[in-house]
Structure formats: C-alpha cells, structure tokens
Image 1: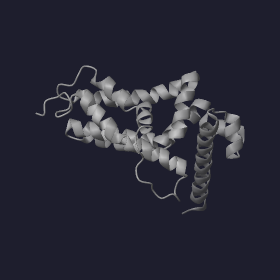
Image 2: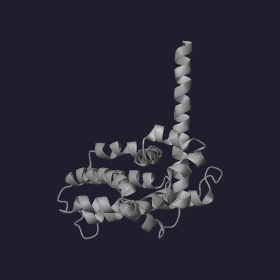
Image 3: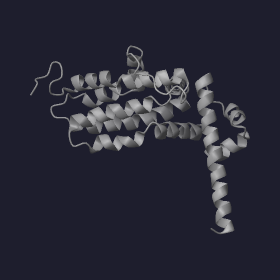
Image 4: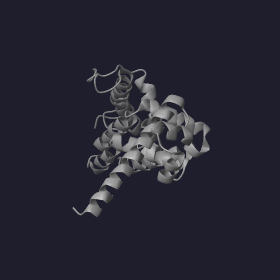
Length: 220
C-alpha cells in the first residue's frame, strides 16, 4: 500500500468513527431526554457543532442516519427473506419476525423517537417515510395471500407496528434471561419482551388475514 493510500484509509476510518460517535450520541440523547438538539449531540459526542452539520447537513440528515443505524442493527436486511419465501403465509410469518427483531433493538429510543414524531413535524416526516416502506412491504405480501380480505395490507401494516409489539409486550411474559454481562438488565428485558410478542402478533395476523386453520376459518 502506498503512503497516500494509507493516509486516505486512515482518514476515512477517522471520519467513520466520528460519524458513528455522533449517531451514538444522538441515540443516547434522544433516549434520555426525548429531544434531539444538535448542540447537545455535539457536546455529547465531543465534537464541534459544525462537525455535526458537515457530516449530516441537517437535523433531518442526522435523524435519517440514526434510523439507518437502528435498521442495520435490527437486521432489516433480512426482510428480503420474507419476500423470497414461496409460501405466502410463511412469508407473512417471517415479516412479523423481522419486524420484531427491528423494534427490539432499542425500544426505549424507538418509543421516544415516535413520541417526538407526533409533536415535531420534521421528525414526524422522517418516521412517516420509514413507515411508508413497511406499508409497501405489507401491501406486497398481502397481495400474495389467497382470498385475503380487502383491508389485508392495512391490517398487516398495523399489526407489525412498534405500537402493537410494545402494547403486547407489556402483557407477555419475558423470555428466559440472556447473558446479563452483555446488556443492561432493563434493556435486555425490553428487548426480550418485544421479541416474546412474536407468537401473539403472528396469531393475530393469521387470524385477521384469513389463514387456513385460523379461528373462524375452515381448516382446509
């Protein structure tokens, strides 16, 4: 490797580390305060406010980066598995599982983010754009279901929302504890409880969409 290439690689690594630190600071600040101030994020990340602007251009750009980070950590790339399933009902089941994994990444941050979106138009637009992608996915999967109700896409969209998982999680016993050394107990409990809601959401989705053998449907 030439000295110039080495310097360029080192510089890119430094930029990536700075960007990751800013996103982590935004996530922590949002979770703790329920707000997203670029000044506060800059202080927490130990960078100049101008650096935040240089890297993300705007508050919306930083929000998009935060959402992208949560999506990557939550395995949203696995949605391709759902759309690739030949059986439409197992595709719906996989869609539910992947969404549960995503919502389980950081429930406290997601709860704060969505609450802020109801009050802040700028944040609300970012969330609405992300939700529109899930709505589109639900529509594609619903369109593959035989004899599905006319509102199948809307039902699947609603049933795979954070609010549905969050509400059911409060009524669902947690899964067995994992390694407590890897996560704070409260974060681990929140993650497990949302994932534990998967069977309930799957049952609700299958029943609402008319799956064979679901309550109220012929066993086929």
